[in-house]
Image 1 (cartoon, rainbow, N blue to C red):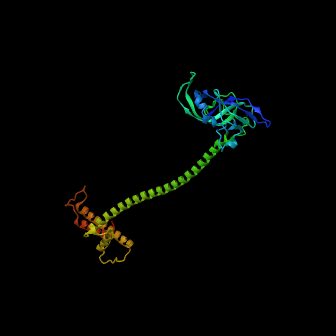
Image 2: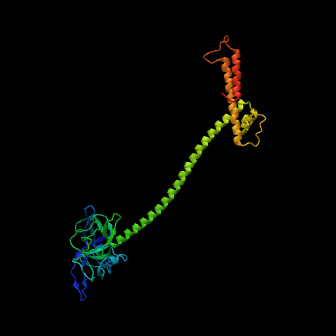
Length: 353
């Protein structure tokens, strides 16, 4: 957790124009903060924490900055305006803390000091020895920098400043500019810009990796879709072919029975065709004939059998008459009927109806 405290100071100048002083840089007691929702949070800095030896020693050698730009480190120090150095550790002065400082320049109208530090916040509420309520206790305070700040503004809730503010540098020349994807530009601390650029670079790399994986996925999906379609088509074709084969086999068996062929169940379709052809034309030599030839001869034989069946049916109709007009034997013309039977048989063998 970070904190920034503010105190006024008076200073003297050296012959070189440097400012040397031993101002108050902190104190014990109640410190008030503004939460993000606008409510107030009261924190207590007890003497045993404020004057802890390790805490006081941590301020020595730390930079004095123009405003609270960020917590200072070796990576961002070049982008933060450094005005001077704290040249001693902190010392107790009653309820206050003092330290020796040197300012190399003070190119700002601001005249207050604010410490930037980290701490552990013990969120145990209580009452101070002088009867004041608090919400939490500051512990393990470690200083990072001392900032020259403007007086009078409330602390920024996000940064939990004691004194008043993160400084808005008047010329803002030390702030970096970033451009967002929507085209808008904003000013920010240099380390924020670096972090943003790193995130953008990682995002670009991750998108490239994602696009590559998406391409592979789409290619595999096309292959899978094609295989599924081919499989479905093959199943449909097999079903159709199977149905056709069944119909063809039934037809073969039916025709073979009409020719009174034996053991037809054990014969292939081709053997049945050959048997039918030889049944009709015993002297015909069909050895070494093509499939097309055998199919053509079989079709002729099949048609001939159909015509024979038709002629037989005609005989029955001629002899018996139709269902609606039963034969009258007294009026039956035998000579005429015989002639009709002979003609029907002749037509059957000629392949006519």
